[in-house]
Image (cartoon, rainbow, N blue to C red; front, side):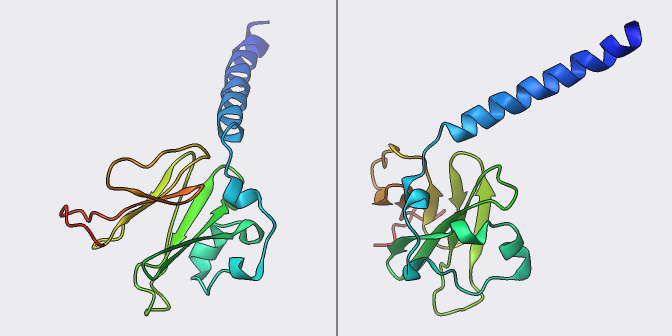
Length: 147
């Protein structure tokens, strides 16, 4: 009887952990991703690796900071969200993709920081709320603001 018990306890713990993580993730609302899709939501050409990380049908255009377009999508495995940014719009292959659960940030090496945030998030001093789910911090890693 000890054998089945040794398997049942870790299995129960793993199941409970998965349920808690799913509940936490599903409790966050991202209204930008829930609106109907339009032509503006069509993603640009991404690398095969980047495209594999995304649920392409869920992609939505969030807006632009200066001339830098920003999209968001659910992750292809359904466990999180992705932020898709091109900090160098004149370079077609300049797209950056960051994925994770909750808040997701993309920090180009010499540019503003883009954050995908759940509904209700507020921008801190100096940050800009671009859409319900996009906050941009115009300060670079050197502390220089990009107007």
